[in-house]
Amino acid sequence: MGDALKLNVKAMDTKHEEFLTLLGKIKSAKDSEFLELFSDMIAHTKEHFALEEEIMNKHNFYDKAEHF
Image (cartoon, rainbow, N blue to C red):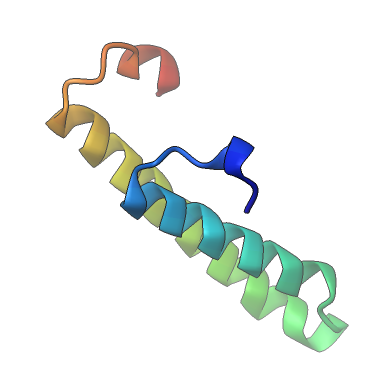
């Protein structure tokens, strides 16, 4: 992941790296692999936004209403 995409919040940067890795797998997936990877992407997305919301709430992020 390029520096322009980093937030310097380790947990979120890790989630973003995982997302990009999973996206790469989906892009090169065989038809037989796609549905499982797509399900993984849905689960990852739910985890991502739950973590993001938790971090924003913990730190009383000023613009969280706009983000959600």
